[in-house]
Image 1 (cartoon, rainbow over the protein chains, first blue to last red):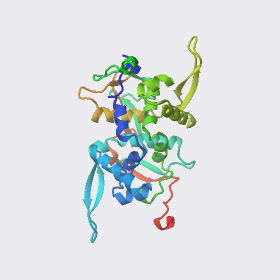
Image 2 (cartoon, chains in turn green, red):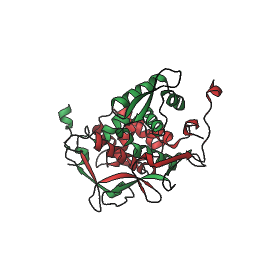
Image 3 (cartoon, rainbow over the protein chains, first blue to last red):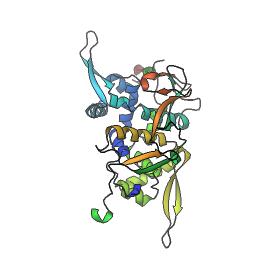
Image 4 (tube, rainbow over the protein chains, first blue to last red):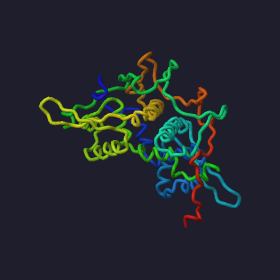
Length: 161
Length: 161
């Protein structure tokens, strides 16, 4: 079965896009990944409305990417902060892929606004395409695709009429 | 300067999100990456309206991620197909990061609908966090962040009033 003949409704990429294919969702994940956890901090840093931020945070909590925790500063009422779950932390390669591409094509002429380095050795961190045999791939030209266990044919055009 | 005190308007992640942080854009990039190049094929496979698809394709061409080419089948009028530029092809790690995360958390119980393997050896392909010294990182806990060459302080709250 060719890819074009497959039903894409259960494609993993599509399902992932359904959860994180939104600017504010991705920006919120960036902020929390970089340690900005409090509602008011995220709101000010992103310049986002309270209602949009509330909507995206609630969605991320419901989907299990963020966990809401209470904190209280002396003399103030209890407030919320947000931390990544394992499911949310597993999106770090995605955030890194965005940064790497942005650093290459969209950074200011003098260079990126943030440097991300390996804590142990100080070298820049990136994502690389690799296979489970340890080979590094230069591009998508080096991959083969075939239907997986949950592949199914897409409804034909005539069936949808 | 702490991250929270930085102006994020020139953040590479944010700029990348500005171009590709949209469901239809990402779905179109997935399709073209997998060899679906013709307007009508993309439209049918995604179940997207002509106007939305036209809008996203035009944006991707304008931003230099796709190139529009004419093709003509015997007896038919000339039509358009879309191919990735180098800038578009460089998003393959991003697509792969989405697939990897989707395969882990969102695939049907029997497994993913598509298998992506290394052409040379047949092993599954994924993205990995690595540093330029060749170390593999397990998570974002192993990274340090510091302001880069284009870092600038964010406007203070009082300055924006």
